Structure formats: structure tokens, C-alpha cells
Image (cartoon, rainbow, N blue to C red; front, side):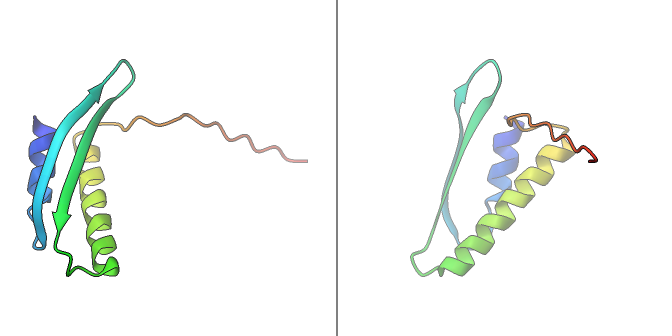
Length: 82
């Protein structure tokens, strides 16, 4: 509930005409939240991409502040000196 509330607060930006945030899937290794928001057709692609980046960064910042880790594939990088 805290995550959906936080994201809904982030989505109160000017230009957002509607929004939906919900837990769409759950499993052993991850839980999936769906975040959808609508903007006016008057928005340029550049303005939408800027808004989307801002929303994504604010959401990631909130997750980090709450110490919530995102599920991702683990990749090991090995560097060897020749």
C-alpha cells in the first residue's frame, strides 16, 4: 500500500490527466506493480519523455529511501589482467 500511495503522489504532476497503480503479479522472486498514466495528446514526444524520466527517477529514489531493492538478473563481471 505504501508503494502505490507513493507512486500516486509522484503522479500528481501537472499534465497527467489520469493514473492507475496496482499490484499486477506476485511470485517467489518478485512482485510486479503496473504504473500507467495518461497525458494530453498535446504533449510533445520530448515533453512526455522528460516527464517519464522524472517519474521513473523519483520512483527509484523513493524505493532506495525505503531500502526496497528491485529484482534484476545478477551479472558478474570478471576483469583479468593479461
